[in-house]
Image 1 (cartoon, helix red, strand yellow):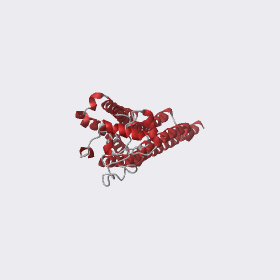
Image 2: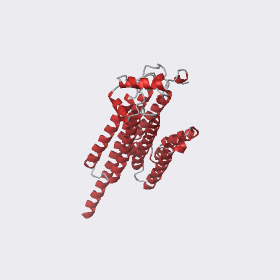
Image 3: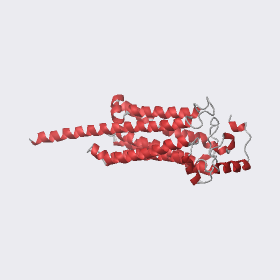
Image 4: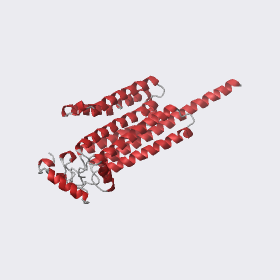
Length: 317
């Protein structure tokens, strides 16, 4: 049962008064002082920004502390770091391995596109979520859209390196994840699917997209074995990524630790903030796995080329 069921809902005059207080420097409000569309977690009692009805004012909230500050800054900084890391790796990939191809660059670009889009849209949503109800709903869709891009962008390079000797399997799995991703995107963005009766289907699509990664991993294990797949895709890092995502989602759904001490974790340490940090750690784990896959693929390719060149030398004598 939510707290607002027990509280007297504020009227329009109360919102006007509170907005005026915010203009005078009282920046945050209590749970029962904000409209229902700003009430997401009834264990969080304070630190709510008032409705701004202004993008400028919402962005200005980056400069003071409230219950969305950690959510915004973790993913805003994460998006910038992901973008800078992607540019750095792009600039140094050829220097790292002379045999790096355009396909390698495209595979990594998909990952960084997904990471920057997800983290950037998450930070954007949490920044503008107090603008108005309609903007909050639109921002929420952007947040889900970013999740879709992250799943898709993580899937593409892992398949590329996991089945590098099987182009047909690469195309099959790329087609699979792209199709599921497009379907999930439609469910998120199209008005028809945003009604309550479609909620189970929306959940099903997201779960299907997330769990679809299990199929090629199990296929790879059966085809190459765990030890070889560890070399080809950094399997243990992918498993770590999955554990971090599941742990984050479970903590977020259970609303731990704030459900144990309501009001104590309003600004720091709430489940949503923990989830954001675990998303960053999961994305980092995936990148480490990709780098190991890249190193193995090109060290192996370099060894094959060296053997080929040696054979040519022997044949020419």
